[in-house]
Length: 106
Image 1 (tube, helix red, strand yellow):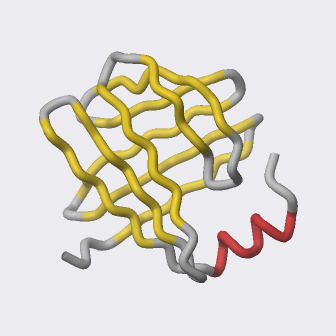
Image 2: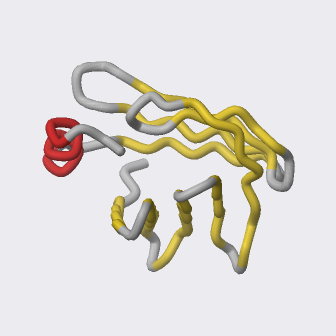
């Protein structure tokens, strides 16, 4: 659902993702080049107001499944996990799959 210019920008930019966990409460912030940031706060198994990288707002209940954080809403599924010391995120929307692997910097 993103315009092609946003897809191309996302393909080539370096995003810093900051994840803070306190029990079942998470704050997930993505810092984009140019100073723009998106922050989502949620509690596992409770509905939360969230925002996509493209700025769309939605409600979803984030769950924990086999060590992965999972957010689902119609036509979209996002998973995130720590694997091999890296943050691995997979988004699937209408048959298109996007995978981002991030290294730890701090």
